[in-house]
Image (cartoon, rainbow, N blue to C red; front, side):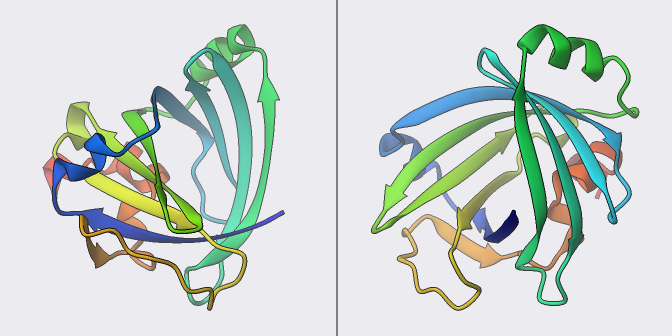
Length: 155
């Protein structure tokens, strides 16, 4: 139940040419405090409820619990969420032995594209695609919970 991931800015749209899936995502936060972020998400035709804990000192890992819920329940829960939601498309791209998830944001976060890769350990080696730019793993501004309250366009 520990998520280990690294985040990067994306430097070009070249990832779209090699994506094997893409899904529109709408999400909101029942709680956006870092100690216990509670997220509601609709991804395609599925709903999810996710709880995340504080990040480790390195920013690479944190507790994560996620369960699929009926999409109608997710829609109802989105109505209870804090002000400010996230609208994005997630693309999945294989690179070596890993899958990168690339989020292209819309609305108040338009212009922001972030790639994430999940790892088995904080020191695991992975292949960086050529469209990967600056690492932002330990920059809280790039957390979706932060972006929902402090949109990218207002930076």
